[in-house]
Length: 343
Image 1 (tube, rainbow, N blue to C red):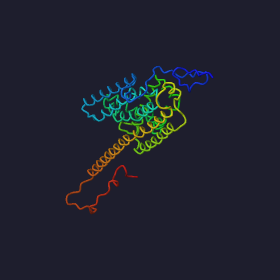
Image 2 (image 1 turned 45 degrees about the vertical axis):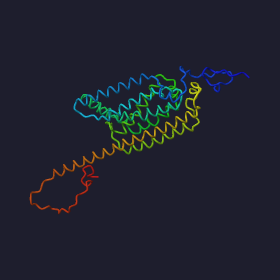
Image 3 (image 1 turned 180 degrees about the horizontal axis):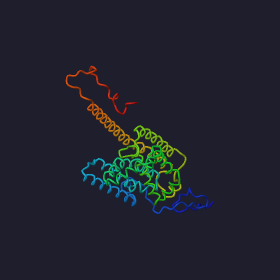
Image 4 (image 1 turned 135 degrees about the horizontal axis):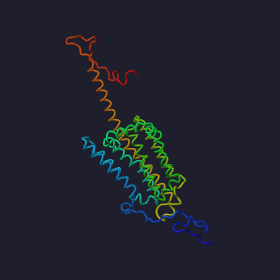
C-alpha cells in the first residue's frame, strides 16, 4: 500500500490516501512554548501600540489642562487608566500575542483580557469626564447634547449592551471570524479593538462613574453581572467538554508539538471561564463603592433640603406658646422627604 503524501507541515493523520490536504500556510514556524519563552517571547503590534500611545498622550494632555484650570484630578484615576493601557499592549505583544495563532489557550486568555479586564481599568480612569472638563465650553456642551440624544440612549440600553458583551465570545469562537483572526492581519487587529470597545461600553454604562445618557439602578448592573457569570460558565464548559474543536485544521497545521487539540481547547475554556468570573470581583467592588457613595450623596442632599425647609418656616415671637406641645420626638425624615411626598 502506498504511503500517503502529506503537505509540508501537515501531520500524517490529516492526509487520506494520496490526496494532499492543503491547509493555510503559516509563514514562521514558532518554537515550542516553554517557561523561558513565557517571559521572552513577544510580537510587534504597530496598530495597537499606536492607538494606546495616542490615548495615553491625550489623557495626559487632558489632565494637564484640567489641573492648569485649577481643577483637581485624582492621581488614582490616572494610575488605573495607564494600567489598562499598559495591559492592552502587553496582552497583544507578549507571549499571548506570539502564540495566539499557534495554541488556542493563549487566544482564549487574550480575548477575555481584552473583553473583561483591560476595559475595566480604562473605564475606571473616567476618560469621558476628563474629556468634558478639558474641552472648551462650547464643544463640551455639544458633546453633552449628543450624549443625551436618542441615538446614545438607545445604543446604551442595558439589553443591547448585554447582548453585545455576552454574544461577542460566541461569535468570535464559533463563526468564520475565528478563522479570519487566525490568519492574522487586519481582521485580527479589528477584532481586538472590537473586544476592548464592547468591554468599555459595558463598564461605562454599568459603573456610571462617567456621564451616561441615562442612569440605571445599581441592581440592574448586579443582575447583568450574574447573567454574565452564567454565560461565561456555559461557554467555558462547552469549550472544555464540547465535541467541536475550534480552529482544528489550522492548529494541527502550524505545530507538531505541545498538548493535543482537545487538551489545548479545554485549557483555554477553563482559563476563559475563570478569568471572566474573577474579573467580575473588582467590578462588583467598584459598583458597591459607587452605591455607597451615591447613598451618601443622596442623604446629604436630603439633609440640605430639610434644613432649607426648616429655615423657611416662620419664626415664632419670643414668649409665644406652641400650638402643639413638643413631646421631644422628631418626625422621621421619610415623612418630610420632598422626594417622597405625594406617593
